[in-house]
Length: 107
Image (cartoon, rainbow, N blue to C red; front, side, top):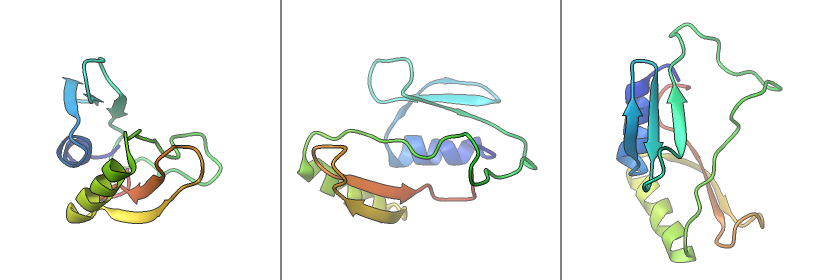
């Protein structure tokens, strides 16, 4: 990611994750007591954006406990200004899915 502060706003502020460890080049976020659920690493400002067909993170998924939780998350994301790309049940989770775009400049 080019902007670790944007990562803090999204993963910490919007998704409610806690920072378990942080340095000048990386932040590790968690939901519970595990050391980290996701690690975000800084790339140079002039790093090339990911291109189609490259290896890398396409998306990540969070599991919710109910359809009601999914609806609440959808409403929360909208209230935070997150662009919702789609919300549907593709069979991979028992409660459906919300596909979103992280706010701010491209990671």
